[in-house]
Amino acid sequence: MSQIILANRVLNIKPSPTLAVAAKAKALKAEGKDIIGMGVGEPDFDTPDFIKDAAKAAIDAGDTKYTPVPGTVALKNAVIAKFKRDNDLDYSADQVIVGTGGKQVLYNALMATVNVGDEVIIPAPYWVSYPDMVLLAEGTPVIVECPQDKGFKLQASDLEAAITDKTKWIILNSPSNPTGAAYTRAELKELTDVLLKYPHVLILVDDMYEHLVYDGFDFATPAQIEPKLFDRILTVNGVSKAYSMTGWRIGYAGGPVALIKAMGNIQSQSTSNPSSISQAAAVEALNGDQSFMADWISQFTERRNLLVSLLNDIDGLTCLMPEGAFYVYPSCQGLMGKVTSGGKTLETDEDVVTYLLEASGIACVHGAAFGLSPHFRLSYAVSIDTIKDACSRIQEAVRLLQEAAEAA
Image 1 (cartoon, helix red, strand yellow):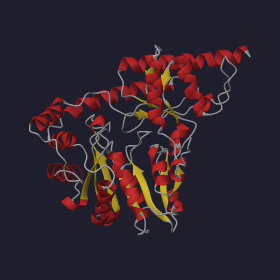
Image 2 (cartoon, one colour):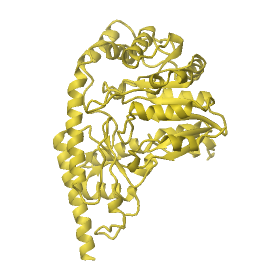
Image 3 (cartoon, rainbow, N blue to C red):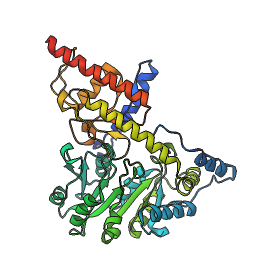
Image 4 (cartoon, helix red, strand yellow):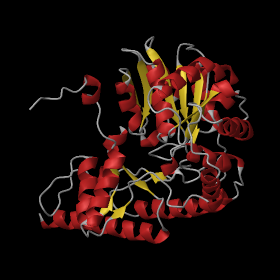
């Protein structure tokens, strides 16, 4: 039997931990286990009906053929209008691209620009795919830790210390996956002031959770904060989170013409155009009535407040209040060194989430997957009752650890 020799670039990466957790939770549920899945990064709300209706209308109209690789004229116009309306950014059609989800847009940008030896600065905690995308592009991820006592946010001094003559990109994600931390205008200004001094550094901005902010948080994006950086910024967004369209797979970006063209060339030789039906739905999402979001944000706020409060009542856990997204990222430092009734010592946050899954049926993602331990990520894109049940189970699991310690 012949042996398949894989490319080195594949050997250097790992499957998405968040998708792996979701798959494991589904498998355990299928076996009849009582599992609460809080690891997946998607809203639990259905796609709004007016968006689904637009997709149905597109099907009925025969809008089922190939489209231009970088997106339909209608969707690119909707993206241009969105950037102007929400962010006061002016893009032309040749500065905009549509991809099969924000992930493809990010991937294409890195593939189009990163050479062997190029460095990409990634603040940690980070979305799990950033470092592996850089590795696939044969670049070098430069991880800068942003601990809980700094609000999980990159500090200007740490950014400047990480920049070298090999730096190609800095990736900024606000609100953040996995922490929900969002940068204020003043915090962004401190970062853009640093970046003005280094004209060789490009800025990759992931605004996927832009609309999911709470308590009146004033969202801003770096190209707004410092227009002098406009020609060095790729602003990425999509319809997955704000419109609960994760499965529709539509992301988009605005950026420099040469970069957008190169990304389009890569897309033309890989996936070609995104789904025509999904694009028609995304046009309606961006152009249509946005009032439904107020109810979603109200529900997310209630869930967030409850989850943070309940977690902070559990011995061994501390949790910051996030400004946006639908995740919390509690520290489990207080559980390190605890021993389970089965004699297993909790030495890492992966040990903690494995214990929570086995002892209480809670599926979540360990902090090491996001580059900062000892933490774990919980999604509150679940019902209030589910949050109460989950926290009750976590509290009981922690109580059992204490009981085991007392019995030792």
